Amino acid sequence: MQARYVLLDGNSHIRYSVADALEVLCGKTGFSSGDHVTIAIGSLQPSDGVVVGLPRLDFRAANDCIYVVTLPAAMQFWGKERGAVGTQKYDIFELARATVEFSGRVHLKDGRVMSAVEVIPCLKRTEPTENEWKVLRAALGAFGGDGPYYRQLDAHLPGGPIPDLRRLDCSLLHELDLPLLKVVVGKLQKFDPSLKAISSQKIADALAFFGVRIPKRQKSTG
Image (cartoon, one colour):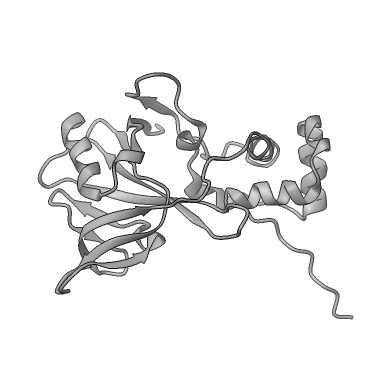
């Protein structure tokens, strides 16, 4: 049975640290001593080409629900390695697949242990435009099959529906297997005829924003 995701709190913009996220989990789930959570990092690539991380903490409870707490989009975070004197800045993607103890200690996948982990919110644009959403939805419809790119979220959110960017599991989008750009554009425009008004380059840029890569044509060596 597919796990059910529960988005606990949509206020990621006022929450920066792992400790803040654990406080949300402790207050709304059975998260307690002996449990751990996993950090996942999705990615977006705005038009300047610099990749931005979308961090979240996932707690799999005994009822097989995965409770999700999000943190702000970021490119870096502060952390204090075991034995270090003070905190330092690190690339946000170093947190990918890290595990977090109830105490707040973070175990990176390379074995390092950190405390006082706090993301540095990114000031870049991280909300997709309407056209970027249209391109991605068409790509998932034309090429995504039954892929698990959207989480089936139940939400404890006041004031409306869950934003698509939080339902979307951006950490999986790099697995979307696409053909060459010319083929992609044709398929997407067939899936959504309104995309005929968007250039091939804009379509490629929109997919790149979400971290989706299109293979380049190999140059002939003959």
